[in-house]
Length: 319
Image (cartoon, rainbow, N blue to C red; front, side, top):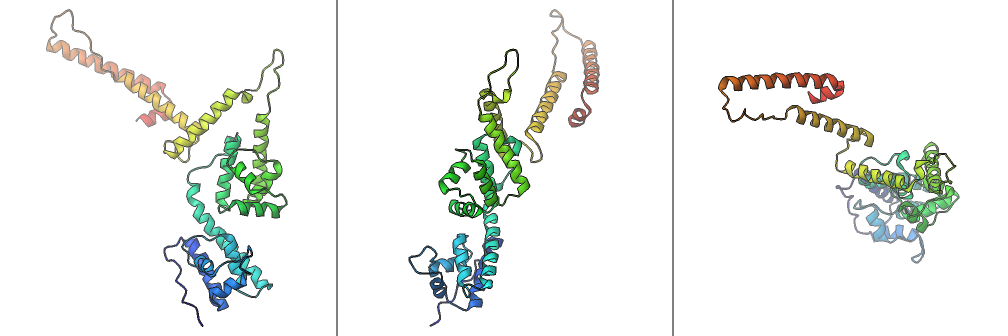
C-alpha cells in the first residue's frame, strides 16, 4: 500500500534551508521508498540512531532546521548501506546542513566583533568564541563535544558551556580543539593562542616593584577595570549607531573632540555681547549704527583668526 503523498517543501523557507530540504526530498524520491521505510532503516526503535517517520518527514519540509544527526540518518537510510554512495550522500547533506545553519545563525553576527587585541578577559574571549561558533553554523554543545573528541582532545559539553560563557579560561589543548571544531584556519588559530597567552599573563600577579624602578600599568586592577569599561562603552555605542561601522573607538573619540572644539569656538565667536548704555544717557541712532558696525568688523576679524589657527580638516568640516 502506498503512503500518503508528501507535503511540498515550504516555499517560504530560507534559501539554503530550502536547498537542504529539496535535497533530502530528492534522496527519498530516488530511493522510491516511504518515510516509514526510511524510519525502519535508521535502526531499531530504542537505539540512539532511530528516527521516526514524522521526524524524517519534517526534516524534508523546510519548516525548520533539523539536527545534523537527523539529516545524516536520513542520508544513510536513503540508499544501500555500506556503499560509497552513502558516504557521498552524507558529505553532501552535511555540507548543505552547515550552509543552512550558518544562514540561521547570521542574525547573531550583526555588528562588528571584538578585535583580537581587544580580547583581554575570559568574558571577552568567551564572546569571541561564541561568535566563531555562530559562524560555524551554531553547532550544539553535544556536536561540539563529538567534534572535539574526533579531533583528538575531547571538550565535554559542560566545559564548553563554561568556556563560551566566559566563566573559565580554556587550556591550550581545549582552545585548539574548539577552534578546530569551529573550522578556524591554522593561521587564525595561532592568533587566538596568542590572545590566550596574553590573558593568562595578565592574570598572573605582578612582580614586586624593584627599588627605584617602575611597574607595568597593565597589571593594575584599576587599569583592567578602565579597559573593560571602555569595551562596554564601545559595544553600547556600536549597537546604538554612534560609532560608524568603519571607525575604531579611537576614531570616534577624536571625532567627538573635534566636534566639541568646533562647538566651543562657535559659542565663543558668535556670543551676543550686550554693552551697557553710558550712565543712563540714551544712545542716538548714529552711535548705535556705529557700534553695530564696529562689532561686525570685530567678529569678522576674530573669525578669520580662528580659521587660520584651526587645522585644515576642521575648517573644511566647519564650512
